[in-house]
Image: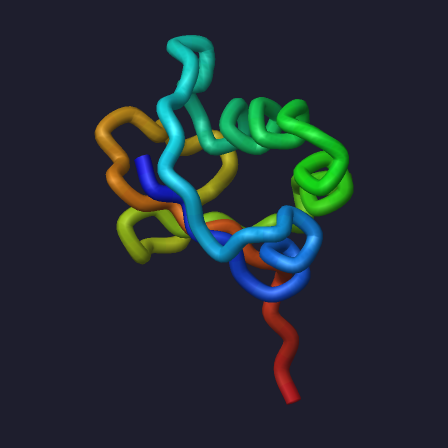
Length: 83
């Protein structure tokens, strides 16, 4: 699965994208965020407040309870602001 990171999520993790293989225990977007947060300090800092992280699967916004099975691409980014 390809993960893409945007804005300050990318800055804290230190990469714009990566390919990873998920453990079988990762079933939902929420599980994915928890799994990633355990990967190291940068991930933990970026995902410190998981409810604030917006997620898109296959370029469609999804809720954190959505399954990740079969997804080829998941993007993580901070909340958007208008202006």
